Image (cartoon, rainbow over the protein chains, first blue to last red):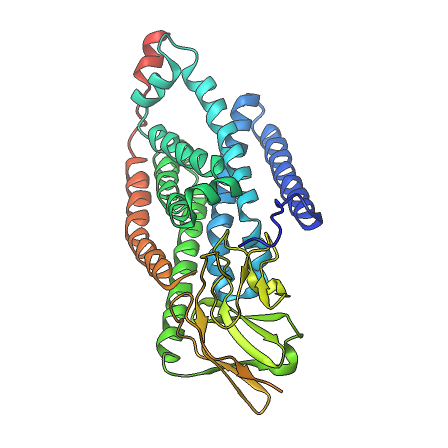
Length: 331
Length: 45
């Protein structure tokens, strides 16, 4: 249910995020190309652009893939998660520059169609081309329009193909750039980035699993009653799930922090007319059941809550979406 | 992130932890041999 649908425009935070992102990418390219031109005066401008854009794309993909596990381990990284799609689109555009210049430089001068030449030429270019196609599909469907029309499960499945793109990119770099650049530093950097990402993801997964097992049967103290402003929420992480604990009219209820519409952060919204209202598009849910008011059908998971001596305790086991649970009294 | 999605991510990264080092090691091993040439490009010259 939408209280009042309003598309997300570029707000102040997004402008600052994009300015920092664009500025950093531009600075990286300027420094890389400038330094390379001094160190390798015989290299052509196209070669420097290919190398600069290629290394920047690899770097950006590592940052993108690190954001998820970092957010699961520490909530202070969450602002990066909300605008991760901007980072993804930027990464695709940079990779596209790398691909386009490579196609022109290495395949446009022969008597064969450049794409045909690419697919039948050096084997390392094919994984790079396939990775670029995946990144294109992701960038093209990154807008909320596609999230809404494809539905969140299909959209998420499509965007998880980024892991395949990453594997193809490692093959592209491992069989390509690392062949022509024999300095072991480059192989070391690629290996370190790969190990860092794998370690981050596996550590985050293990932590979530440990928390899930340790707290399977326990209520967990999340905050004090006074820590939650009236008709607002406090967002907590329980067994890797983000849970919004709302306080309203002398009661406390806990629901999933993820809006069913477009994964908006419900805990950053407030209670309007007795309903939790998503700050992104105004979708609403009843706080005790997590169900949208009739005739709407969206539902989110609910969690059991207890209040003991002004302390708020939440059980980490999620109840099926729409399950009504008695709110805890906090008067 | 829901629990099933978290488990899917874990399985994917466990698989990548095996596959990615193999890909990189293969690339580095083959780097010791001379790089292949682009036949079409050579013919066109």
